[in-house]
Structures are given as C-alpha cells and as structure tokens.
Image 1 (spheres, one colour):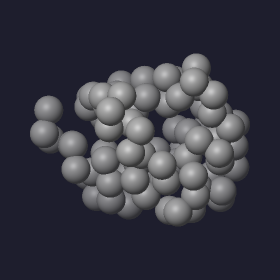
Image 2: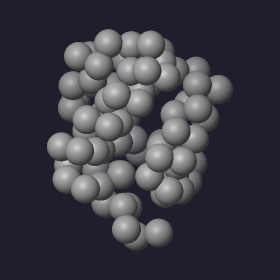
Image 3: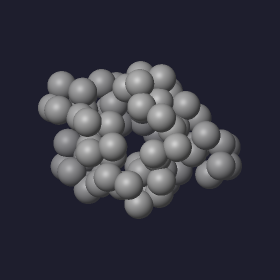
Image 4: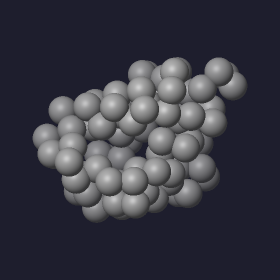
Length: 82
C-alpha cells in the first residue's frame, strides 16, 4: 500500500465518520481540531484506524499524533509490522 493509498483511504474514512470536508485534511492540519474531537471521538478515530489497518495505537504514541501527516506516518510505519 502506497502513501497515497493511505492518505486517500484515511481521508475518506475520517470525512465520512466525522462528517468533515476532506479538503480540510492538509498534512500540517491538527487532527483533533480539524475533526473537533473530544476524548470519546478520539477513541472512535483510534478504533477506525485499528480496524482498518489491523494496527494498535498505544495511548503513549497517540499523544504524538498531532497532525494528519503524523497520522499517515504512523500508519505507514506500522503496516506490516504487526
């Protein structure tokens, strides 16, 4: 799976789940602010990523995911590592 595939799939999933225009998902945009995430919504985001890509995101590492670029990087670096 290429980086472009990851970006396209993540953006489509998050736009659908959180009803936000995917055009707002720029690499440097803050994930929590862009998606208006509270702690419960953040759990939903983690569940979507974990189910879709079969990767775990520990809370300690979740704190480091601030931008969409961070999220794409995390997924890309953990695919196939499970």
